[in-house]
Length: 307
Image (cartoon, rainbow, N blue to C red; front, side, top):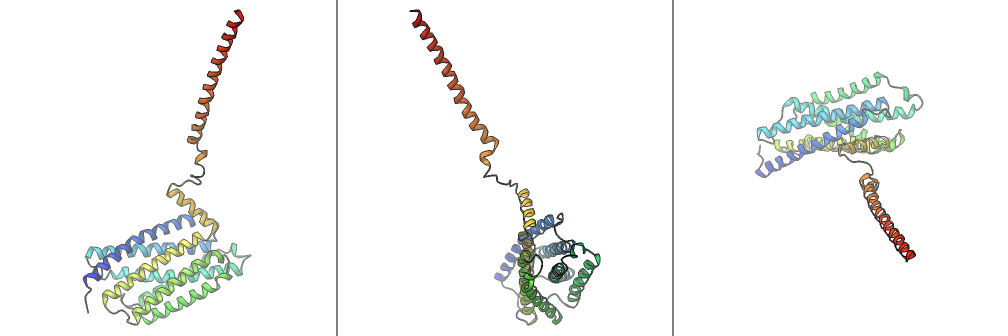
């Protein structure tokens, strides 16, 4: 077992600092997503529950990973193993979110084939079924994982199946309801699964062997998974016309941006006062001069008439 060099340690600190900074952005996107989706009534209740669950899972994933990073900085060792319970939560959460993407395509498929009756289809049993099934798959993969440093054959098979399913879902997504809005989301889901499949393969086939190498590989995979999760949430908002409008409204409120502020500046009261004052002053001056000229004419004419 070899120990990391000083350069590797420095790279670890830099990467983990960057990772922690990235999670602040990911959390901001998650909060924005909740602010946009929760109050809206334009989404079907089943789709809405899936998206909200996905966002909360993403937030839990990022918060737990942030705690793990703080522990690394506290112990002054970037490659020190984190708490086993936190590692289990990370693994379970990641698998849960990946399989949640498959639930999304199933829900959209039901909305497509049952166009007339699906609007009133909001039974609790459907939500309970997809949540329970997804959680069981993630939980089984977590408890069979053994150690956080390893990837079992069951983990690799499950992840490979998830990757193949996400590829098929992306290819057939054009045939489901609201395909235009969801196509980028399914692409991000496929890329996320594909990346995790490469990561699992690298560990399972001993492409990385040293503990610090596995730690860096895992860390990069966790970071990429969180970024893909944020991309999934962002594309859900940016590619849906009404959700995009709500997102822009919230962003304007956050950054105190008023619509058409630059274009309407010439119509603002402050600008209107200036020309009105400028037009009033010459007008009154001209009137005063006219009165004086008129008085002089009368006096001149009057004096001339008497003479």
